[in-house]
Length: 217
Length: 215
Image (cartoon, rainbow over all chains, first blue to last red; front, side, top):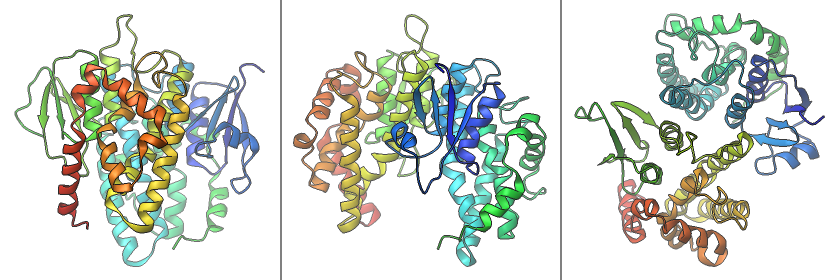
């Protein structure tokens, strides 16, 4: 099909989830191409020869890689339910927070859940600071995007259920209600959106999956 | 940030050797905008900040897009990035690649030794070769017109001498098309104004090494 939309993904990846959520928000039909990261398909290697990673969006035979790049492409190609604001300053703000999450939050949050002992305490402390900063972006707003889900909400989606599951398994609480009232409220509001409920991976499946991973040394 | 920022107009807070700040200068010059450049000691961690009518914009690639979208070309469209969404996505992809692959590898050429440096050398040269392949026979990464990816990469040009010496690279011989592209970009007033003297950058690197206690 000339206009076919395919997402090369793995079911447990918060990165390919971003792409799927964006497409679902816009009501775009797409096919999921599930990858086995230990045995990547020749198609994936053809479509993302530089990084060899998921997600890749294939639209009308043209591949796009890198989740944030894909999100911008989706917003520019399908104009309904815009993800990014119109105003250039607001767009810059949204891009800033998305980059902040990717560059400053993801890794430290992951490490806070997988390390132990003194290193874990350091990671938890640093992660806490990053979350505090992230929370300021929610001031006076229901979602990062305002009244509706937008670019930053999609990027932060890994907080639920991924981070919830990881915190439970690590037996730590990073997102305490009393310390992060806005972020906790965001998690509840985001989770109750129909489009999120319909697209996110099942919590139990994630629990089972993460249980098979050994904590990195 | 300084408390004496003007309510109206453009201020670029940057550090003269910073390739990220250089991106901002090129973009502002390309658009022919009036702006104030303020030198700040950004250290290693902070990037340039563009202040427009008192509001800050951070991160060099975000600054580039902001400038492009706020002051579009004659036809009302941004012109650093191409018009077609797929072409735009490719430009964003390569700019992201440059940030991921060139920045740290380049820094490690002078910050590290031994195995770490050898690793950095490999990554640096491989990444530039890939970019050179992407350039192909085109005059610019943007095709016929100087654009987003050109700005994202040419900002490193003043550091090439430093990388060459520190990493024993010989970039001129290994990357002839890319070096020709650098010279082509330098013919643009915006670029020649923005790029500092490579020898001054080398001296600056030596100062940084002392500051960080690197041998």
